[in-house]
Length: 132
Image 1 (cartoon, rainbow, N blue to C red):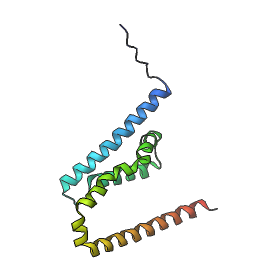
Image 2 (cartoon, one colour):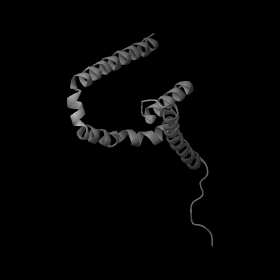
Image 3 (cartoon, rainbow, N blue to C red):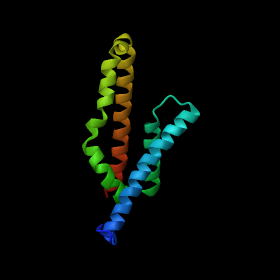
Image 4 (cartoon, rainbow, N blue to C red):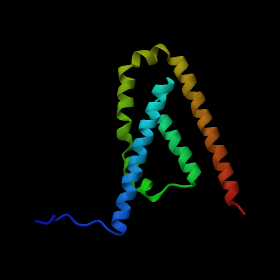
């Protein structure tokens, strides 16, 4: 008896292969970031290191491949779902936030100011490149 599954050939197969490669890349970079953080005993999340590795790869490539864009778009549309554990942690460790409120406010203010400055600088450089 022959299989009734459709054969994947042509553009459909190529697109599926791009999705699988992109999903594998994201999972692989997440794993690599976690492994490096554990091996080097760094005090930062492995997923952050994985994102920095992804940023470096995209910068070297000069853009986002279509497969990666197709895979990441649904994830980014539902980004708030990924923040639920962080919100739960804030509720769980609220006593630590109260205890170190001044330090937390100082750190949040400095990081926000740094983010705004770096974003403004980057936008200024990109806009200068586009203007004739």
